[in-house]
Length: 275
Image (cartoon, rainbow, N blue to C red; front, side):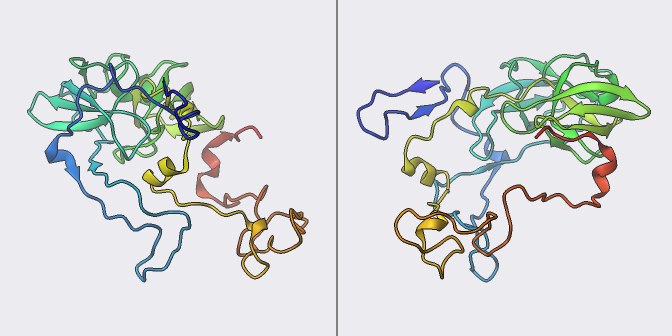
């Protein structure tokens, strides 16, 4: 983690992740880079449907191979790179058949390491294998929910899931939230933890840095007028005036359950996340 000298009020608390010694190149592989159009929270009519989005630096999307379905084909890590669209680092892998793909990089992965996706792959960070073959207590990431769909769980920086048990065709996984969930044990998962372990220690430090990330300012409801927000109005620093917290549109929020009671995936949840 890099700290700056307090040459200004904004730099006093600002911190960034040090990429020196971790990343090996600043230039992405051109064939795997594309440009995504920024919608800034607008719909097809140009109206704001999601507030507090807009501006931001121009960034290019790296096409990540979440499936890693080259079964039995060994690959060698060529680079460890930064990805502006995600909180973890990515790795460029060149496979034995000549193809190059971006994958999510685990913490222990280095340039020159060999990785493989196979049902009998050794339990080494970066390798990908079936959940049924992974020993209990192992950390995994980029886990499939259905065979062949590609990784959907455990893709953020620093995150990982823990294998708790294998029984009756399902693997019990402990999620980063603390929830315990069942996943079919013929799904693939990568071994290890997602890289960039210092990401959760970053202090934004100033408003301008949030604007670079495409985040626009958020105004508190209590400082608005009554016509603009349910919390608005009153003299000075008045209280909310409502018994239950609500959104700008008067919908109850704060403590309200947002998950559907009849969600089909309820049967796969062994234990809910702790409150």
